[in-house]
Length: 152
Image (cartoon, rainbow, N blue to C red; front, side):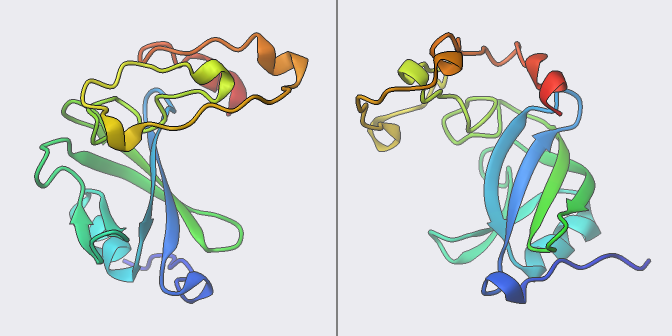
């Protein structure tokens, strides 16, 4: 089958991958992929990435059991980013066992449950004047992602 190939040369051999849940549309994670990772994803139907910290191919869920079954791969207008649309299995997409890696809000530092979050995930709080529209933002629970439908 012929497939559309992202432009890996544009960003030094890598493309940004935004991974979203097929049913909830929740952003699960952002990572990178090289040509081999995208090809393995398309060949196997499971999500593969390039680990920039370990400099190696990474099959999501290989050690954690939190597998991502890819339903589609979208390529952006510039060809340098892709979206994996997945069915997430297991405890969650994040290494902290949160459903999404985006379990914190910058607004007031609100945090959604992330059972294995530790010192490596701590961030500093800073004083900053925020737009009034953002002042009333509440954190979302893992199951309360219906607001995304309005955004998409």
